[in-house]
Amino acid sequence: MDEIAKLKAWVEESSYIVFFGGAGVSTESSIPDFRSTDGLYNQKYDYPPETILSHSFYLSRTEEFYRFYRDKMLFPDAKPNRAHLALAKLEQEGKLKAVITQNIDGLHQAAGSREVLELHGSVLRNYCMNCGKSFDLDDIIHSQGIPKCGCGGIIKPDVVLYEEGLDDSVIRRSVEHIRKADMLIIGGTSLTVYPAAGLIDYYRGHKLVLINRSVTPRDSDADLVICDSVGKALGEAANL
Image: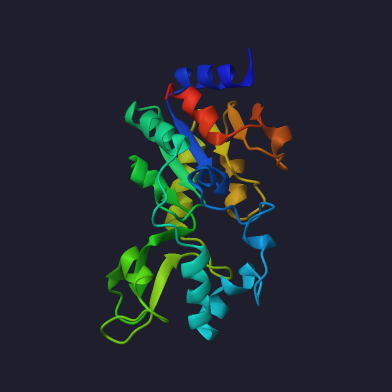
């Protein structure tokens, strides 16, 4: 039995599937992966992306942060790809119980997924740091310079920047789902970003699947490794 056939068989026999995904899920929607050879980490700026996307840089050089953020982090025309649609289908069928994602693009929800745990937040949500008023993506895209609320406060994206901690409730719910899972599928992530990558240690089952185009530090821990497109693997597994 080849890898895709085994994945499909495991999906059919499982009743509590959890998916954990990273940037490789969204690259098929033309959203660049930070760490790929042509990703943001290999482009030239006055500051490295890790610095620009840090909490301290946001506070000290807010206008420069937003110049980079609007230019390189927002993809309003991106559409869900086969991977997103396959996961939504598996959830509708009652097999998939949660999507845990490191992505901030909102494409899982756009595809129809309901139980989506966003470890790093979402560009679709923004809030005033002064009064807490909410703003959507269009408000950020169509603003100039530093976006500000009517109260005069600065608007901040609801994304987890470097130097900021992950949301405790999102982590807790993610751990609960992974502990209950009879199948854990990990796709499109190098499993090098902690604490997110450490979540897989809570899995207690025997159907740990890694789908990634390149090797990861956890390949030897997996019950099945598929070196291929996440969209192709999940699409075939979900009969999509």
